[in-house]
Image (cartoon, rainbow, N blue to C red; front, side, top):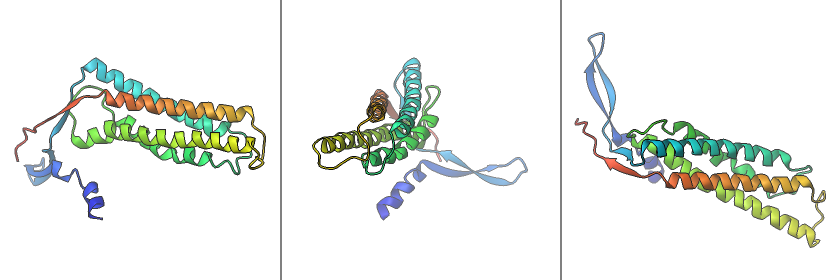
Length: 196
């Protein structure tokens, strides 16, 4: 439990409150960042390309996910390989949140901003790959068992099943490329000159 609480408040030491004189003459407090800065080492053009490619791939991931979810022909009862893909909606949602937080230009970043953009996108893409691969493996096992007569599927293999496999493959590929893009980001930590 202490570890969970510690993770929740892991950025609190990066900020300090400091008093200042407000416009109405009263003393007020403001939050100042005193933690280490994360400085991207990639040049401006390369970082912009990484951010643009990553955002486009997140959009492609969403399209591939929606395509796979709605192309699978009914009935879907008993098609348990769909469950891991449905679960992939959570890492995909985190990918979208991270993509919106990616910086539009090269600048030093607060640790929370770096973690909630680049790191979150990297981790979410890995989880998405795992979920999608489980779904693909489930699809192969499902139709292999049906082929060998272990059970009778509710409907024969159709073009929609093949298109589902294509959508799953596209989603896995997009997530993998996102992961590779995040690996291209090089950083250094800079001491904060703010003294409180």
